[in-house]
Amino acid sequence: MRASRRGAVYNRARMGRGGGAMESKTDEHRQIGAGAAARVRIVLVGTTHPGNIGSAARAMKAMGMRDLALVAPERFPHADATALASGADDVLAGATVVDTLTEAVADCHQVVGTSARTRTHSVPVLEPDGAASRVLGGAAEGPVALVFGREHSGLTNEELDHCHAFVRIPTDPDFSSLNLAGSVQIMTWAVRRAALADVGEPDAVVRQASAAERDPAATHAELEGLFEHYEKTLEAIDVLDPENPRHTMRRLRHLYLRAEPTASEVRLLRGILTHTLRGR
Image (cartoon, rainbow, N blue to C red; front, side, top):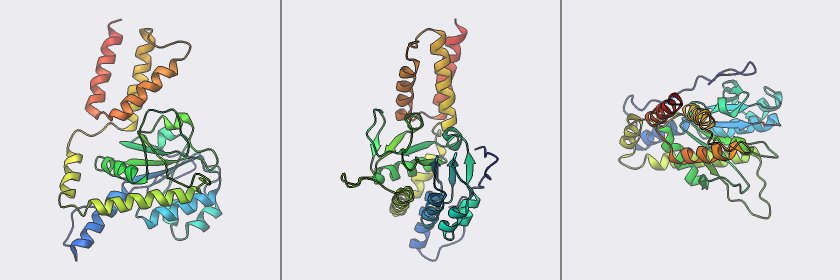
């Protein structure tokens, strides 16, 4: 992931699964669970108040997560962020700052976005527990992302188009407003709880290893390349509606995000598209 001039790239630490004997089975489970949670990237988009960035960093570190990406924050770095991080300064120092969500999640195999409103998207809408299980499943194959939008307006429809699924925190309908850092705390806690529960199962480590060994899911960057290839091909064969080309592309995007194709499947599809263009 490329960092902009405003921030440094975080050298993400990965907790190993090997090593010496643990003092107890419980300690071993906790270490494995923490390692799984550490592979989840928290992405904050367009954050306006630097204090929310600091509070989010604190929430992350308390749950064993340190991979923070900031998309076009209004003010960062900032003293308010440092003050509210309360000991999570290392998370702030290691944050990646980029200009677009596409950059922030380019290497991710699973992207789950938070949304407080009902929108016309044909992708799964999950509650925190379901979203936590989903991102942990993706973490066996590589980086995954939980994406949080702006304090007042959330994520745009275009940004939600990058997500494989949405998560909605079930708040009181009479007052559904959650602070950004509060949302981060709820979701990071859900991920850590799911990770610790998962490693309590006897076959959990075997299951994680087998997931990593099979054909990996396509990364976000690989899927974006596929979508661009589709658009170019469909334009060439006059399939896209010139009045509203984005309608067809959005439906195709949602179809493939739901299907979660592997990297080799994406290469196969792009080979077919290339052949189609050459045949014209």
